[in-house]
Image (spheres, rainbow, N blue to C red):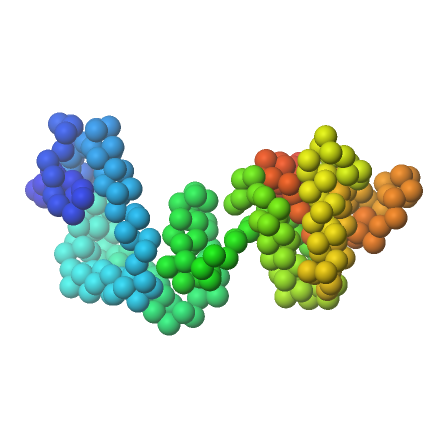
Length: 296
């Protein structure tokens, strides 16, 4: 019987703090084939602490170095293909002829492709999947990751389409900058305008979201929106930028007409710039879950 009674933590095999074990039963024969340590909360905490301590250094490694690590994983899997196949067959009851091309072959292909893409810079987009946003971004935002220039302000853009329509609304920033200052909001708007043009929108129209269309000193983000709109006249001549604008004015030309609000943006917005992440995230989730919009 195979016995795996230790955990690999912080680069070495360690005795578990928990004492419980579990037998692994071959579903084809119903015979026990292995015994593994179960561990406990303390073991989990040790593993998490070790991973967190290693992350800062790993996040600073160059793409070529990461590719080399992936190459080593590939070499290790290939060298132990028969051993791994036998273990999977005993655990799952699947024949080796099926295990080798699937459970082993698929990871080998994935690692090889990931290493090649990292090494050659051929990846055009990185999919987040179910990874937590904070974890995902920690590996991408450091300038050492090679995905942005130093001192570049980053922003997040949601691409949103309404049910029955292919017209996109670009929402920024609803996921990255928590309480952005004026310069960061200007950068987010610039990113969104550039993205809109790359998507084929020649003259993007942007509404700067605020509680009211009036710049009121007691409502700071209305004043800030007015300042950004004035700045955009010179900085973003390729776009129409208007603000402050309440949500109804951005989304509805009828609302603008009812308020005698002259606007090229109302009911025809390509971009919505939010004042902070709370507002942006609420708008995104309302449109996603409440209105059935497609958001990416």
